[in-house]
Image 1 (cartoon, one colour):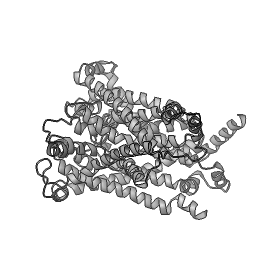
Image 2 (image 1 turned 120 degrees about the vertical axis):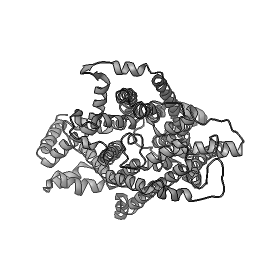
Image 3 (image 1 turned 30 degrees about the horizontal axis):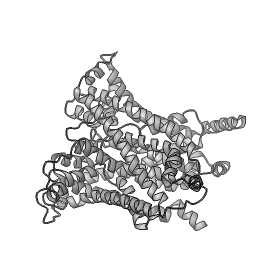
Image 4 (image 1 turned 120 degrees about the horizontal axis):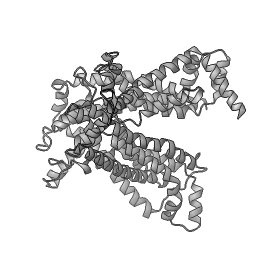
Length: 571
C-alpha cells in the first residue's frame, strides 16, 4: 500500500510539473463546470429562489397543476413498462444468439436490428406506427378495414419505445451471457436438471444484476425521451413533453425549470443506482471471460420456436424502419397509395428548405464530432493514466450528462445563457448561436465516447508511455504520438457515434434552435405534428441514408486503417 501511495504521489508531482497537462486539466474543469454543472445549478436557483429568497412557491404552483401530477404518473408508468418489456425482449434475443445454433441469415437479422436504432432518428418508429396502424393506416384501415382504432397515447408510446430501446438491452445482455462460464450450467445439466431449471436456477441468478442494469438504462432512456411521446403521445402527456409545452405554450420558464428539476431528480436517482450499485455488482458476478466455448443448443424443439419467434420480431422491426422510405413515395398517405412518386423528395429541397436544413445539421454535427471524440479521449486518458485530486470530479461530471434528459439540459441552457452568465449579460451572445448547438452536441455525446475510451485505455500497459517519457517527450507529445494511435479504433468509433448522435438529436436542441438555423430533426418533428407524414418520411429517409453512410464509412476505415488491422499484419 505504501509503495502504491508513493507511486501515486510521484505521478501527481510529475503532472504538476507539466504545464501542458495542468492547462488541459484547468480548461477541462472550466468547460465541464460552465456547460454541465452551471445550467443545472441555474435550474435549481430558478426553482428555489424567488425575489431573492429561498422558497418552494414555484414547486407548490406546478404541483397544483393537474396536468403536471398526471404527467409524472404517466412518465413513471411508461418508464417501468418499457423497461420491463425491453429487458425481456432483449434477453430473449441475447439468449437465442448466445445459446442457440443459428443460421447466418438469422444472425445477420439480429445485427441489423441492433444497429438500426443507432443510425435512425429517435422518432422514426412513431412515424411508422402511425402510417401502419393509425386511423388511415395501411394495415388497420386498408387491410383490416378498422376505422375507429387509436394508436396514440399510452400503448402507442410503450410499443414504439420498446421497439426502439430493446436493442440496447440485447447488446448489453449478449455480452454478459457470453461471460457466463458454461461449465456451471453443464454441471447442473449433468445432475439431471432440465434446460428451464438450469436457466432459472443457474443462468438467471448470475444475470440478475445485469438485468437490473439493463432495466434501469432503458427506464432512464424512456422517461427522458421527448420525440416519441411528442409525435405519438396524443393527449397522453409525459414530463418531457409537459416541460416543452410549459415553455413554448405557457411561456412559463420558472415553472418549466421546476418541472425539469423534478425530472432530473428521478433520472439522477436511477442513474446513481445503475452506475454505482448494479454495474459494480454485475462486474463482480461475471468476472472475466468464459473458460471455453459453449455447446450450442441444437434440439429442434427448442431452436425452431425460439428462432421463429425472434426472426418474426426482427423482421417486424426492420419492416417498421423500411416503412419510412416507402411512406415518402406515396402522393398522399392514407388516401391514395398509387402511383409511386418522388415528388416529396424533390419538395424537401425545392419547397421546404431541405438544403439549408441538411447543410446546417451536417456542418454543426461535423464540427462537434471531432471535438467530442478528442475531448472524450483526453478525459479517458486523465481518468485512467493520471493521478490528481480533480480526477473524480472530471469523471463524474463528464458522465453526468448521460443522466440529464435532453429537455432538462435545453431548459438549463435557456435559463443559464439567455441573459448571460448569472443574468449579467456576459456570454449572452452564445444563446441563439450555432456555437451553443455545437456545445450541446458535444455535452450530450461526451459520456458515450468517454466510456469507450476508458475501456480501451485500461488495456494499454503503462510501461509503453513511460518509455516515451524517459526519452524526453512531454505529456502532449506522448498522448498524440503514443496513446492516441493505440486507441485509434475507439477514437474513430467515438467520432462517428458523436456525429450520428448529433445529427439525429432533438430533445435538447428543439428548445435552443432559432430561425437562423434549420435542423433536420426539428423539421421532421414539425411536419409529423402537422400530419404531413410523407414529407416527414422524405426528410427522415435522407437522414437515415446520411447516418448509415457515416457508420459504413467508419467500418471501412477501421477495417483498413484501424489498430486491429496493423496487429493482424504484424502477426
